[in-house]
Length: 350
Image (cartoon, rainbow, N blue to C red; front, side, top):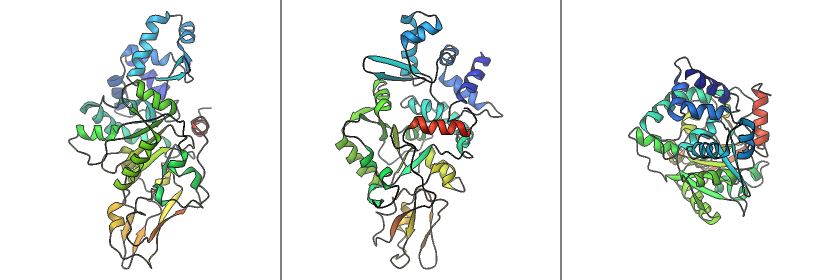
């Protein structure tokens, strides 16, 4: 039994997000929490490319009926990915983070939280030394100057296509916080999914479809609350997390790093005009990254800590803060395929 989980861990580590081993084996405990041995065997028989049931059954030499029930059961539990192309239903293996763990919305208990708390530092460290970053921050809409080079990739409302399928789900980080006895005061239903990801979450009953108009209202609400829009380092959106500093692992993980750019593609830094700043401290209270400190005569932003989320901009009563494009800013990858290929090359997987 233990061998199948070791094989599962090794396979998961071949995905761009990785799944590293640890000295105490917490990653195996986590897999045993989510996967039965039969689940693990089934996962290992799948490929990273989506396949229809008929092709999977033929490749494995199995009857379609029982196999289809098993695949659908695993998809509903968030262990494999299911997407649709017209009348076709396709299944594939997909990575643990971002992927399997986020699909555990509404399945969180104290044990899962404890295992994730223990494993997350090792899991999150996978991409820290890689040139390609899998995450980026989209600034608050009111904070982005349309004239900057990277603005077209960083105005959330302009990235959403009119015909795009949009879904919203509860934040899994707040569900985990609940199991620790911590109550989040922010909007709970705030994890956004688009296209195939939205359909997957909706099919699994963990998200609901919303209109573009509803999305705009939600974006207005989370901007007022000072939440950080975290998404993949791609122009094409599949998900966007509206992250709070009190619960969300991504924000908390970045705050622990000496430089935010180790984890995310940072396009902007906040800049404070000392001539306009009245040292009211609103920006310090507002900053989710603890990137602003008070000096003798003004406030100062740490360029290493700032993620360019822009939530401080609207909080300033004197309009003394603006977002400035950083010199190292690069456009996101067009889509996930190109980004993951780049990450895989960085890790020597291809």
